[in-house]
Amino acid sequence: MEERRDEPPPAVTRPPVIASGAGTLSPLQQAYSNYVRHATACDRCRDLDGGACETAGELWRAYQAIGDDTYRRMPR
Image (cartoon, rainbow, N blue to C red; front, side, top):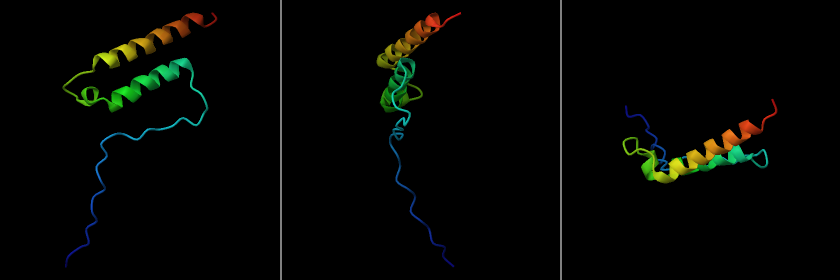
């Protein structure tokens, strides 16, 4: 007896973009979002053996700088 076999779903080449429903993001969240958006779309960043590209490094450093600035501004 032959069983029915469904066709496999089509392969997804890029992860889906998830929109934020909370309105606007904070500068720190936006910086991280920029980094993640680039890292998930860049072929070099997605290659496990290739390492991150220069753009990803710049975006990550921008995220860290905003985080450091935010931390310094927190009341103590």
